[in-house]
Amino acid sequence: MMRAWFLPIVLVLSGSAVATGPAFGGDAGAATAILLVFLVLAGVNSPLFFPRSTAAPEARRRSAVDGRPVVFWRPGCKYCIRLRIRLGRSARQLHWVNIWRDPAGAAAVRAANDGNETVPTVVVAGRPHTNPDPAWVRDQLPRSA
Image 1 (tube, rainbow, N blue to C red):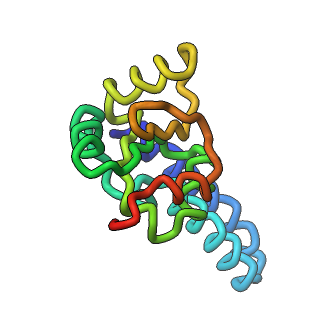
Image 2 (image 1 turned 180 degrees about the horizontal axis):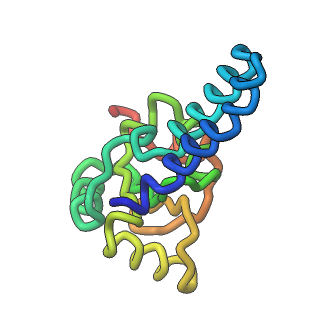
């Protein structure tokens, strides 16, 4: 659990440290802007930015029932963030598995990527796709969803 929050915590602490210089120098506007940038970065890299994760076996079971893709991701991954942002509201229709929280999910990603934990790995109809284009992922969603 702590591993998922490490980067956001470091970003908040770093932003606070960097913003103290302008704050003590009398430039409250610059300090506020710096802190705001770091807070946004922390939020985007936090687990809160992504839909609720499920365990890999449960995500596979749900995917078999409803035909929606399974996305294996981890906090701090810029490609996962890109996928999440570009999918927009459609992201909530996917089954998300945080590989830092789910050892079975991490094992599935390693099996699909020659032993590497390369994310995002999207599984559609049982076939893994590593770092696919977000438009392609959106096209894989069932039309009735």
